[in-house]
Image 1 (tube, rainbow, N blue to C red):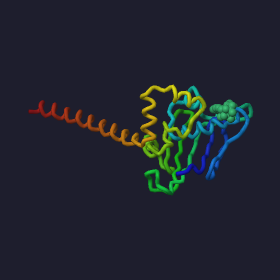
Image 2: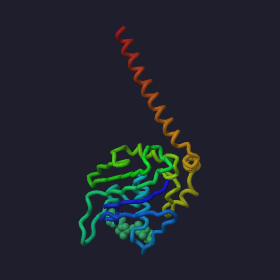
Image 3: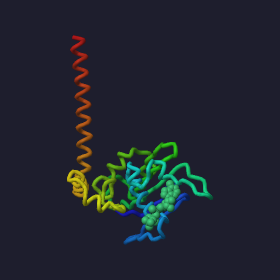
Image 4: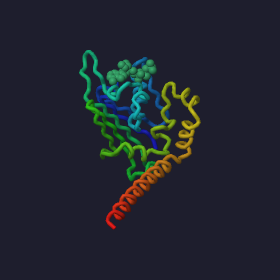
Length: 199
Ligand code: ATP
């Protein structure tokens, strides 16, 4: 699986639609201080489901939307799409190219898409779980993150190892299964109460 392309519009300093093509091999993004290099890695993390805006160097979710300049009006929404080559089908979806999109409106409304179809954030998490590029993966290491990993608590470090070992997807499914069992048991309890009342 390879990241082929990225499209940004209204995301942080990228007011206009901007397309970045990633060829095979290494891509280096260079530019003066403050020109938006880190905003690109922020955009990757955002699409992959980062929910904590502070991790994206903002204070509130609106901070990721282009805020305007003296000459340009602010944008009403931010949108980023990542295009992945899935010809090896490492993502469990029946498409040889997968496009993941996230959109946030200034009103706070948020949308997620997989191949242009509306989905939940959870679907994106599940699709990328254990691929090494999911939300908590080591694929994107921001400034200061190396220090944070080295200083993290054992429980936090365990989450990293679980992602790398490929078991977090199953852990997520297990937790969902346990939640459903607990809900079913609560429902059964209510039915038993009602039957007891009717007898
Ligand atoms: P450095 O080399 O110093 O690390 P960089 O190239 O990584 O810099 P970034 O940190 O990605 O630069 O970009 C910072 C720029 O993005 C700043 O000029 C900041 O004003 C701009 N920026 C951040 N959020 C927004 C926003 N919501 N709207 C407009 N511009 C923004």
